[in-house]
Length: 612
Image (cartoon, rainbow, N blue to C red):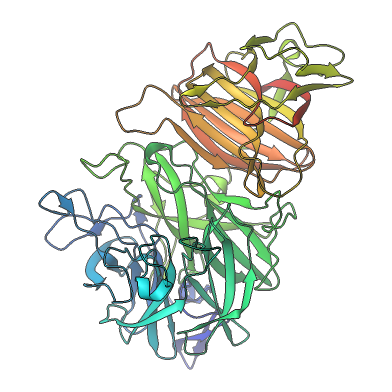
């Protein structure tokens, strides 16, 4: 959306010149308010407080969608189907709200205003949720798009299926309804006989040059786009365009800025309690239908899949940050709302495994044409200057950038260029069979093993050396001779580990996942409370024919932080997420090559540095 503020004869008037409907953008960017005595907003702390009038607080608002109403000067937000909080039960059973609606004047303090639906439309399965709402305004009315994970048998034509998903829409003259359901916008899409349907999730509606588009999809089938009818009620299947490769992304969000469409998408498991690695990535394109490429120039359609990290865990209490919406405030500052998981309160009370996802807010800064959260600091857990939520206000937020992680002195005794033989510092956990590893020329070659290092499957070999005391950096250059794309070599992988034992480690590897090649950054821990996960993962930058992998270990206030970096050239690095762990002073640096046989991992070197 392009928005301008014009002062005409002493009267401020907001004129919306839109290349997309008023769905995820707020009011205009200008400094004009300052000239007429604008006041500053205060501060806020995540998660956003959402009051249920007279009945507590909303503690979960997943997949938030946001809009500003010029009619009443309120902001409105819509959430996926979930209970509102730990006490939201009838007897022993949680109440599942069909798209909760929230309202705010300041973008900080919110109020629960009821649910968009009290009963499911009859074309849904009677037990289906209503997920990932998308709110829009055009042609004088509000449009509420939503995901239906399970449609009625009469809609899919396949009795008894679960997973025959579709997109629906409802309309209203008011952002709070009543909502009149208009039925199916994107139908269930088959990928084969029986109950084999692509995941038709997560609608996003935008407009470009007078044509409306709907983006949708998830891991199974990837994200696609279609032309939408002028009335916003039907999509044209014949116009469908693939936007991302399958098995990597979901939750599309688009904004237009300075000649580019920016596509925000979420990756990995949304709902893995305290080990949720869900994160947001971004690509951009001059054409709304792509191809979208990341900062490294790699397409989100590539087998070695592209995507620049935008929002991921940074070592504070928040993990699982994703499915975001993007907008601007009245002072021109960009913001994102998203859900996350509090590691200290990950589940609905009494329901271990049912992940609670409160709503968070943070500012976006644009650096060299790419968006980043809080200048690169990521999700906030301390007070932040609030948005300029109304005309005549401004924000006191000003970006700062974190100090980069820089290499210090090379630790020669722990580094190995693999010139002729393995250095004497190395030892094996479960030494592999003779002939399956070697030092050849200037590299260490390690055959991929049909074994693993995952929860209770701990039979893979690990080549280990001691890790240094204090803060350090470990780096390797790796070539894994998988085909660049194509299915299926699940889950062949090779790379680095920071290893305490088979059940406690940090791992950064190149891995094959269905038709994709990705860089996975994972954590395993044990023991954990009953029902809690032991393994969680996120992903980082794209791999290439060769990929550079780097793990930075730092201690903050007695807590170990491990941050992932990847690079295609060893010069330009992609910073990924930060896992916390308690591996201790006896942890080791290791190499693995596992997940399936038939390939070779070639390690060019291992270099260990002090952290400057």
